[in-house]
Length: 305
Image (cartoon, rainbow, N blue to C red; front, side, top):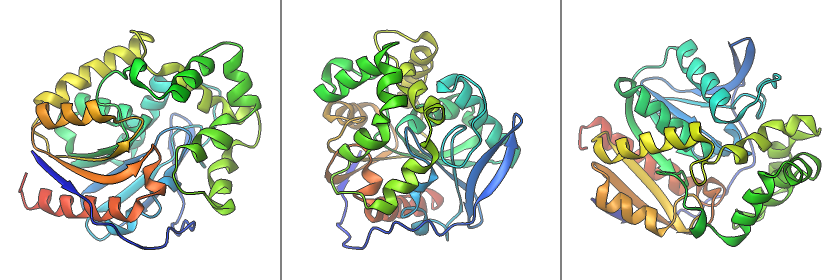
């Protein structure tokens, strides 16, 4: 098991999103994505409440090594917002359809947050189509509710409530106004906050943001989420597919116990410690993340894993 510490990169964290927007129709709705570079696809999958904007400072490190694609999940970012349930089931169907429509083969997945659960599930159910996996702040197993930070536990419980969930997420816009900035060490600029919050100006536009916390598997429920996560959790310990885990302390989605599990049980995995951080670490360590994925990806292509 390779465990290293990332070299700190003192460089400006840009708010700019200098990429051409593209759209493709999946199940009758338009999915927004960016597509930079050529070669084997490197697919960046975000979580809640972010978008492809999360990867803006990471992709430049990889766009000369492969075809870098970052989508906005259905209902999020610049993608359409159809009248569906959202959450794990619906969103995964659109993700799967997106990959099929673009004809992506031999994919390297770069995963964060709910993008982790969906990406790991995709890899487990499409094993012949995944080349390698890089992940950060992504659940490698059913989340341990009892070890979550107190504020996260309280927030999850309330957001899963039929009364408090819509009040907090849809009316008060807590994901954008509170949870996103609170789980980043630095202070986001006004421009950055506008990029993240722009797609969610109305109450109903926040439906996707509410669906995600309801689908986090806790104590076996919801069953679909629980079963999918348990299945890929076992596969992650069995597969020798090249993997890169980027982690921080204390973290939220990947905590100390998870890192130990990876060290002990995961095959063919490189671990890189970035430093102190919380959850949306692409906003604190984008250059380190980009540089480390780039180095690892070069090694993957040289069959060093």
